[in-house]
Length: 101
Image (cartoon, rainbow, N blue to C red; front, top):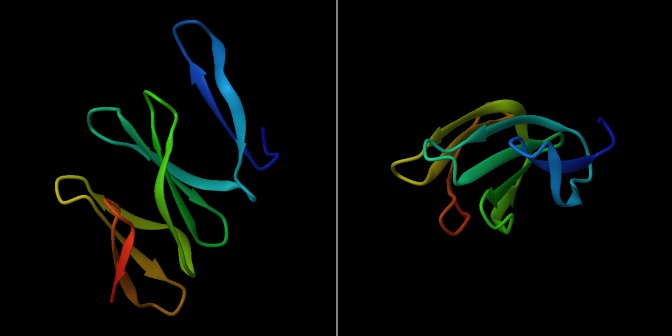
């Protein structure tokens, strides 16, 4: 649904897991970690949200002015590299969501 909410589904049961999470805008991209335990969601307007897929707990995220769908997830290093609208590359350590320029 394009209503600004994130929904987590249990595919095996065909049922919603927990309550929908308000994202504030539409998601533009999402990616799962290789082991499936984390989910990174890009939200229109420059927000990155991170979730534990087992507990559905929201982990530290990040907000900025990056171009939607322009990011790479370096899973081994726990970092995101994003392209901002200005063309500048920004590296974010998603272990604690610290911004490095």
